[in-house]
Image (cartoon, rainbow, N blue to C red; front, side, top):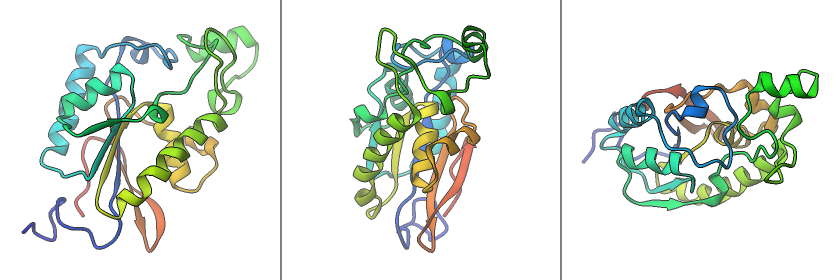
Length: 211
């Protein structure tokens, strides 16, 4: 039987929701908005994914969900997850006409202090999404995950902006609160509850805290 202090010990209440952002791609390295473009991980991105796998080694998850995009699926594979379910709602923000562009490039085009969480995407080769659109998808994920958390920990492997917005929704904050949550490539986060209140157990780190 696991020791009560072990991260794998049975939890007295609901499980934790573990979030992992995919490893680095060429565009994420260069600060370019990467939504629907299906880029592979760089070698450095594969390395941080393996490091996340080491941090999560031996941890039991009652459910494992991943974005359909290659960079997230490869990260999940390198972590060592074996019971993955693809969830289309975990795909990254659709930036529309801003796809592949950096924030400075977009600000130069629009002539003001454009910011993705406030201003969203515009139609391009894809329709683009607002922060509220992404938050609606994140809320669908949380609705599916909630009953599973009663059984134990659940892991989601996805994308920076999507996971930040999902965390805001979990914490019962407005979607734009996500702008205040920095999330690096390959980072591991854990959302929990304390006396029934949604909390952040750890954020933007390389390990899970012990129970």
